[in-house]
Length: 502
Ligand code: BES
Ligand code: MN
Ligand code: ZN
Image: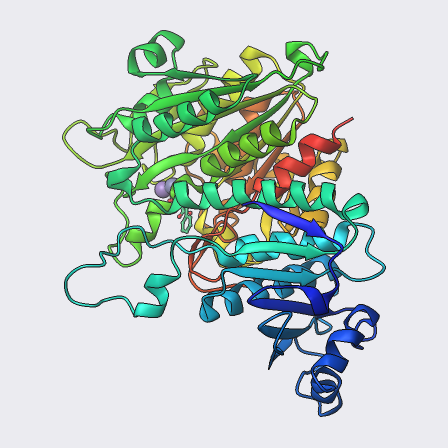
């Protein structure tokens, strides 16, 4: 989304809606005093009458005057959460949803006076993420399933202007918009139903992405190619589906970067385009949500888009294994044994533990192509969703620099993550009597067995597993994510991580 930055005074902002975030002590910003005077003091009056809560995020709308903004929205940030950037993102989303309900075609947001750039960036990010809706399948003909207001607002986003000093703010604003757009794109991919986002259709999206960016290249490995590679685990998961599996390999090779292949950062993301559970079939209640089981892979694609558009001067490798997990005459079965790309053999004890299988081949392939560290994202276990809900991803890794870098990026971006142990003590339960490993360990501590399973394929390459089963798929609105569905968790984190790697 295109966003401008301008030193226009609030009183002169010729927009449908002007939002004024009340940062600091919650007073009306100095820059808005002229506007307030022009409105007969109605802004200060609203604050005096406590129309806004100081502790809870809230907003209050005042009509504008003859000239200047048509409507003015005062936005209180409240005191929770403690992270101010997160409260600013919520404030940005509040401006977005008000703009939407007013059908505003132009919006201005006043940047805090003392802003060095981070506040404006957070406001923009919240605005763009907060505008996001997913309803491409609602028809506008026939019986009105859609309230007219919703329908009318679905298309063009309002033009957004940040009122502040472009020299200080513009760079951060543009970067925030780029990353938020990439996040919304990842949400679109993940939200798309399984029938319209098969492994091959996901590959087509990645192809379009690569074609749009110089120095970003894509290789799609089809079934024959996977057989040649010996990617028996990805093939096993995909063999029950009419839609054959694919391995997407993206490489970002910017001109200035000097790393050798084996010095690269590698990103890996699970893209199970639909997870029925396979022969170990899932209960039908809630199964529809498993169209989101590709959220990790979509976050990796979104992360690569952000990295390319930000022009990050480091080489990055991304691998997205994509498959549909179906039962059927050709499906893999409990008791089967398959050999993965690395030569490791796996006894299938539950076909619903499919994510770790396709990821095992992807991680092994990342090592084969060369990389110095691997960060992997997946909607891997119900255990993580059960434990953390939507707020945190589980970060399962050995302690070390990579884990520190991931957790720090998590804290900075709002893609929250919290560490869980990667401990060899859990290893005996994933050993097989007849093969090297079983794919499904005990139910209790399920997230940790999954993490340990993946660690085996990363070997001595620093490895971080992010289980986004809770954080990546929302069943109700959260903060600046208005609709349930894919949250885009991880795109912001990956962009930050790639930018900050030493
Ligand atoms: N995609 C699911 C994990 C999942 C479940 C994500 C619920 C979000 C919400 C994954 O493939 C799966 O089915 N995992 C199993 C593993 C088990 C069989 C060891 C699980 O967590 O139940
Ligand atoms: Mn599953
Ligand atoms: Zn799954």
